Image (tube, rainbow over all chains, first blue to last red; front, side):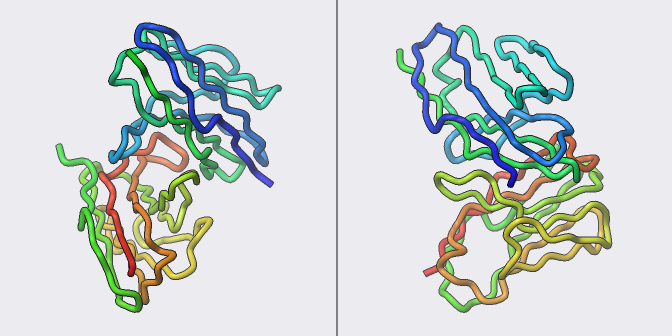
Amino acid sequence: GQNIDQPTEMTATEGAIVQINCTYQTSGFNGLFWYQQHAGEAPTFLSYNVLDGLEEKGRFSSFLSRSKGYSYLLLKELQMKDSASYLCAAVDSNYQLIWGAGTKLIIKP
Amino acid sequence: IAGITQAPTSQILAAGRRMTLRCTQDMRHNAMYWYRQDLGLGLRLIHYSNTAGTTGKGEVPDGYSVSRANTDDFPLTLASAVPSQTSVYFCASSDRGAGELFFGEGSRLTVL
C-alpha cells in the first residue's frame, strides 16, 4: 500500500533550527509537496521537490532523496508564527496526492 | 482576489438531512478537489474533477456526491448525513493535476 510517515508532534525554541522528516512509499513517484497549516486555517503551499537535492526558499528549505523515499523540511531562525502543522504529500504514478497526517510544530520562547 | 470561496463556514446538521457544501473559484483552474480532514488523519480525498463536466471518486467517496457543471463551481452533497461525516471539509483547486493546491477556508460540519 501507499504510505506517508512523519512525526506527530515536535517542539523547538524560537530562533533555533528544526528539521521535519517525511518518508514515503508510493506506487511510482512524481514529486513531493510540503504545506503549512495554522490551526483553524487552510493549508498553504510551501515547496515542491521532484529532483534530488535541497531547495531553499528564505528561512525554509526542502530536501528530497528519491532513492531513500525521504524528504525533510528545514526551518531556520524559528519564529513564533511558525507554530503550525506541516503536511507532507507525495504524488504517485497516477498523479494523485498521498498525504501524511501532518507534524504539529510547537515553538517555545 | 477571492481565490476559493466555501460556504457555509460552519454548520450543525441533524442526521438524515441533506446538505450541500458550496465551492467557487475564480482562478479558472481546471482541477478541483474535495477533502475531509479529521484529527490524527491526513487529508483524505472525497471526490475530484479534472475539468468541467468530469468527476472522479477519491479515497472516501461513499455518502458524498459532486457535480462540475462549469469551471468555477464544485458543490459537494451529503444525501443523508451521518455522524461519521462530522469533519472539516476543504475544497481545493489547481491549474493542473497534481499541481500546487489552493485551498478554501474550510467548512466545519457537525452531524448530530
